[in-house]
Structures are given as structure tokens and as C-alpha cells.
Image (cartoon, rainbow, N blue to C red; front, side):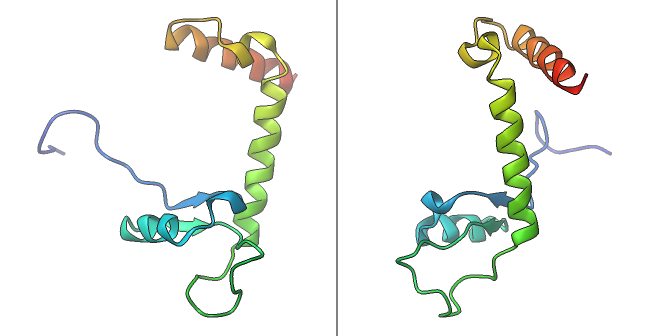
Length: 104
């Protein structure tokens, strides 16, 4: 299938998961304009049931915790946390090695 233009095709995520620090109307509007679902819990100072926001997807938010824990465990390796490698390919190889060590 031929594409018009050069480069990699643009791919947008279906949803973005964030913590309460990203719970601002401007962030939600920007994501909605791009057709991206915002999975962000409301802050305590925001009104909960005024109908402005879509219902909160708890199942998708639980996945955020799993990703955060994985990143935390990867960053326990000093070489990953400080990124000694200058080249992206070498850093990706170190990430693969660290993930393999975690998996074993």
C-alpha cells in the first residue's frame, strides 16, 4: 500500500494514562481534539459528577501501575538509570539485557 509523503506513518495511541497531576481541562481538551481517550483520575478540587469528563476507566489505570513498577525495577540497574550509552541502539540493547535479567 503506497503512502503519500515521506517518513514513518503517524500512529496515535487510543488512550493516554496519567496521574492526577495531568488532570487539567486543557490537557483533556487537547487529547479529545486528537481523538485520544484520557484515563486520568480527577483531582479532589474538581467537581466529580458534572458530566464534563468521561467516566474513569479503572482497568486501564491499573495497567499504569504495572508499567511504573517495571520502569522502577529497570532503573535499579545503574547503567539504565544514568544512561551511560550515547547511542540509542546501545541503550536499547542494555534495556533488553536488563529486562531479560528481570524475566529470569
